[in-house]
Amino acid sequence: MRKYIYVIIVLLFCGIGYYRCKAGDTVQTDTRTEYRKLQGSVFHTFYHITYQGSRDYSHEIDSLFKVFDGSLSMFNDTSIISRMNSNDPSVVANDYFRTVFEKACYVSGRTDGAFDITVAPLVNLWGFGFKNSDKVTPQAVDSILQFVGYQSVSLSADGHLQKKDPRTILDASSIAKGYMSDIVGDYLHEQGIQNYMVEIGGEIALRGVNSRGNAWTVGIARPVADSLQQEHGYQAYLQLSAGGLATSGNYRNFYEKGGKRYAHTIDPHTGYPIQRDVLSATVIAADCMTADAFATSFMVLGKEKALQVMANEPGVEGYLIIPSASDSTQLEVVYSAGFEQYIKKQ
Image 1 (cartoon, helix red, strand yellow):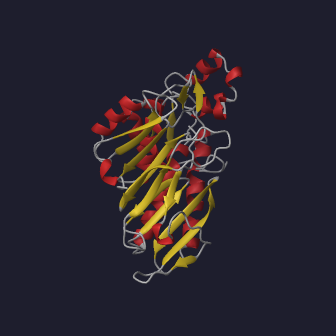
Image 2 (cartoon, one colour):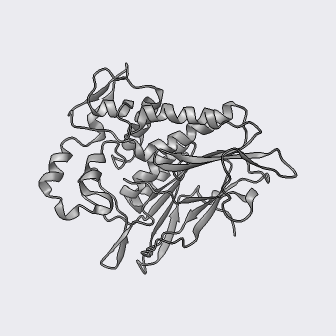
Image 3 (cartoon, rainbow, N blue to C red):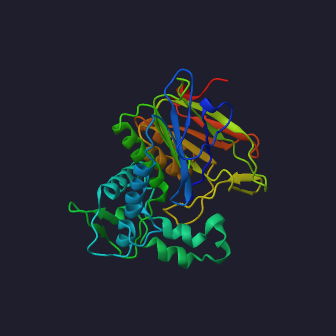
């Protein structure tokens, strides 16, 4: 499933909106130590990191990115995950790979396989936006389903990936950016940084407060359907001071059929696109990797099953944007009981 950057960070120390500073710039206030901002591109997306502190950690963070790329990047032929996909018998999981793999298996189990780290071949078959749908045949889907399924892979104690079918491949893109945000956040915390926000590709790990001494404010963008894909404001603003936040969906890439809106989502069980009633899912959890994985799964599960998972999963709170029951061209929101505490009152 493709992930899209549509959690818009609103950094209040910069006034209304989002202030883009160059790497290494700092923001001075009258009441707090300077806040430093780093930004750039990584993993085919963008990152924005804000933290309170005078030291520039850009080089150290770049080093973390390189290690991560060598572990979980599908675009790096020498990465651990790429070599495992190529059935290299000598490759062994490192801590990064093992952490992501174990979290993926956990969330798969908790969502009855709605989250599946092996689903990439099906996504590729249909193409982005289902552009290949006219060419997809039942035979092609069935042939791929033979080697798709999270239960068909396991990791041995010594770090070797075990496959029931050598054609199975892993794709951690739906969880990796969340984990990378956690890694950078944990690194900053280890350096004594108490206040930070790390956002990579829309997935956020944060702690503490912004430069005004307030909880960090994050806006959830409202889904739009116009062909120009212009911004249509925010569905809600959230205030957080710890944990991780991730949003999954296709808020600028859903389609209309029969007067109803549907997100572009592949069901790992059937291999076919599904017409669920969730256009986007925002999840708050103790860490961004967990939030990232559950947000992805909620797109597959749909509203009712997603709410059931939230109710049964301690520490996971979710906010779903869905078509209105009375007018499917309009939007409604539903969220878990514990999510309301994070919604900023207007």
